[in-house]
Amino acid sequence: MRRLLTFAVLLALALPAASAARTRGANDGTLSVKDARGTIFISARGGVIGSFAQGKVTIVRFRIIGGAFKIRVQGRGINLSLVGKGNVTLNGAGTGADGMYSVNGDTYSVIPDFLFSFVLSATSP
Image (cartoon, rainbow, N blue to C red):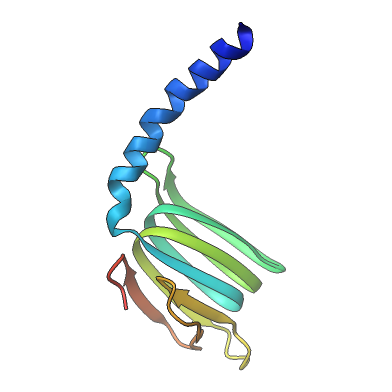
């Protein structure tokens, strides 16, 4: 009986969150970064996960409800995935091996060694 009650409570809490996330998902874009070296700044609404070999992450601002955040990842060996809408700035370290990025499942491109900014959404090129 306890298991059933626990499951029902968890389901009741999860359904509103899932339905809220689903209504905002239609225009979300995706960003994938592989083995980057340099700085990545993201100001978006959505979700991001990642890792890096060496460096630092600065969280400027975040809000759990609604999923808005501003983060800066600086270092090497950066791997991250972002789903959402917002602004992205990539800036490679200029080593000639600054990693790759892909937007909305497109082919991977080399991360430029200059400030490269774009708006991420479902219609981003």
